[in-house]
Structure formats: structure tokens, C-alpha cells
Image 1 (cartoon, rainbow, N blue to C red):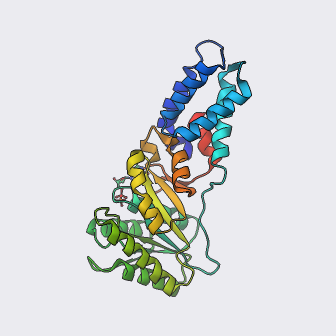
Image 2: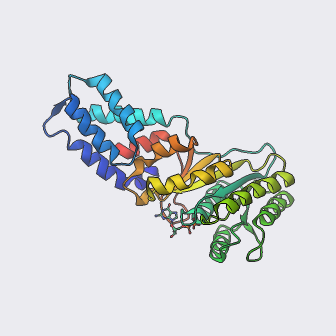
Image 3: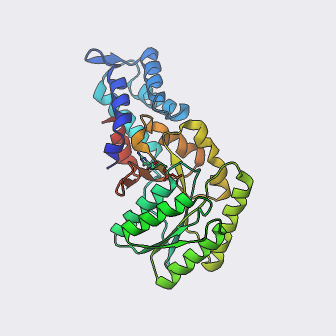
Length: 298
Ligand code: GDP
């Protein structure tokens, strides 16, 4: 699944690296290593991960003539290594419901990601309730209601402008009374009122914990893979205020810079748990480093 989503990145990276090998083999010297580094960087993987890869290639092959396949193999292994702690999959509460709070900047793909995650869990046989906690945007509530209808699950909505924390509370309450496996709660994502938003997120956490001690069990930060490093840095505030536990990287299919998973991992110190691979209901996959590394290069 991840393979298809990374077509754009792979096309660029694989071509770039193949270009380094005009004849059969290539001597691994400083010039080669510099060129390799420059090409890795183009995927937005960041300086540190690219340096680690370059060092590994240098350590193994410096002064030798290598083949394309050997270099590809080494890069793939090193990427896999750098992401080895990450694996898709959610925390699970000992006693249901497992409460998942979803945060992120407007436009990042948050609502769509909630719909896709709900579909994924539902298709695995889990029951769930959605909470339309982005009460500020009527469109987000509408969109989530459509998703709930498609999936066939319950949704809790508040009146327009209702207190998001009260929607969160009612969602957990509903999940408990229905005995569902999951409650997935949307939140507002407007950046212009950042400090209020941070307070709001903290309040939401507090009321969830009040209704269900220990909750939320998972706080997912949705990031837009096409947004570039600056936009992604803006989400740091969310990550800290909401005490996020994992990342959903949306729109990976729309980016030729899929290497961005590496610096995101580094910057947020959070595992990438799911990746968004399109706009459809089924276009989400649990992240796994092996398929990711392979999809990037092979
Ligand atoms: P929100 O404002 O964060 O809730 O963002 P939305 O969920 O409304 O998504 C914004 C836009 O991005 C919509 O047009 C979505 O269809 C699109 N989108 C969301 N996730 C993905 C994805 O994984 N791949 C692609 N190609 N588009 C996506």
C-alpha cells in the first residue's frame, strides 16, 4: 500500500541515484559521496539522516568500485534502521473505549484522516464513535458526519460554536454507554488563536480524563507531507500542548519529498503511525519502516 503512495518520491530518488552510475560501477570517493548526499537531500530527508546514510556508504565502500544495487541496498537498510522504532498501530486501553484525540492545523488533512482511520478500524471489526470537536468549522462537522454515514458509525456533534470540550466529553460518554471499542475525537486547528487553542486542547484532555481516567490513550498529530519544513515546524506547538503520542502523515501520495518522514521523526520525537495515501476512504496505511524504505528506493 505504501509503495503506491510513494511513487512520486521514488521516481525522483531512484532516477537521481541511478544517474550517479553512468557506467557499470562507480568509485566511492569524496566526489561520489558529495553527489549522493545532494541527491538524498532533494527528498527533504534532512541533513542529519542524509549524513548518516552517506557515512554508512563511506564506511562500507570508500575506495572501492561499487554497483548501483549495493548502494541502494545500503541506503534502504540505513533508512530502515533510522525508523526501526516506528510501527503503525494504536495504543489500546485495557478496558474500552480507547480514546483517540486528533489534532493538527486546518488544511493538514485532519478530518479526512479521521474518516480514513475510522474506516480502517471499522473494517477490522471494531466499533467506534466519532466526535466532531472542531465546532468552530461547520464544514468540518458536516464532513465528519458524511464520513460517519459512509462508515455506518455513531457521531456526536455539538451546536455550532459549542464548547469542544463538551463535545469531547459527550463523545466519550456515548462510547462508554454504547460499549464501543474506540472514540475518535476531532479538534479545532486554527492557528491564529494559538494560545487559546492550546488552552482548549488542555481542557479537552482534562474532561476526557475526567470521564474516563487515563484517557485520551492516543493523541495523533496530523501533518501535511506536502507542506514543507516551515509549515511542519508550526505544528510543534500542537504537539507539545496536546502531548501527542504519534503522527499521521497525510498526503504522502502528493509529495515527491517523501523523505520528510525522517526529519519529522527526529523533530517531533514521535513515531509516524499512519500515512495518508489519497483522498479515498481506503487510502491510509499503518506505517512500517520496512515497506517505507523499500518503497522509497526500489
Ligand atoms: P482539515 O482541514 O485538516 O480537516 O483537512 P481536510 O481533511 O479537509 O483535507 C484537506 C484536503 O486535503 C482535502 O481536499 C482532502 O481531500 C485532502 N487530503 C487529505 N488527506 C489526503 C491524502 O492523504 N492524500 C491526498 N492526496 N489528499 C488528501
